[in-house]
Image (tube, rainbow, N blue to C red; front, side, top):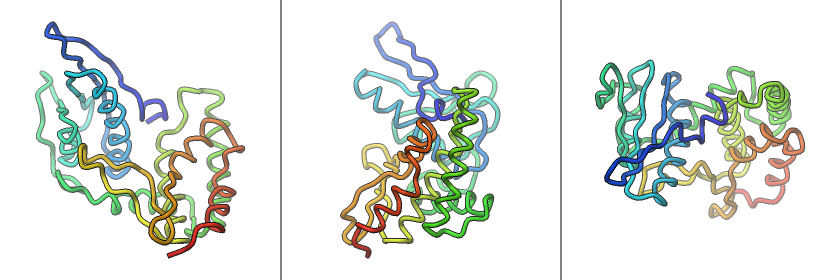
Length: 230
């Protein structure tokens, strides 16, 4: 999935009664932790747009794979519906790695972070973020050739890994899902009493878009030096 796809509404329409339809397409759901996080980001874009354009309807078409129940639950949380198979039939979802409700986002973030660490032989230290910056720079340079292909997988995987490194370094928690939607905020409350609210995923996005001037290692070490640890 490209960076653009993560936060894009693929199509809109308006019904005769004035309801705005917000449509998105999803191709696959593997690995589930990664695709769920990206799907949550996309749903947030759709839900926020819909709040300014009521009444609205959120529709997601699964082009290839049947969605897991966790994805169906996320969509229902924002009043959306998933379709899969011939005839655009609403689907209840298949059993997957996570339940349909009350998702454990800490477990999902940990799965994404672990996946990235194992793929690139990272040890979870602040110093390992130097290697993360190298990987992000390579992705950024590749995207200069094809701007539409900025890596949305790298955004989530490097972003959650960097976040978990910071959490290990100074302590803290992920923001809980928003009660009105069930969607994660993707921000962290770091240090004693969660006094520092940051989004390392947003920092990774800036690097992918802008280049090394937004490197994560300097930002992370700056924070680690100034946040009062738990």
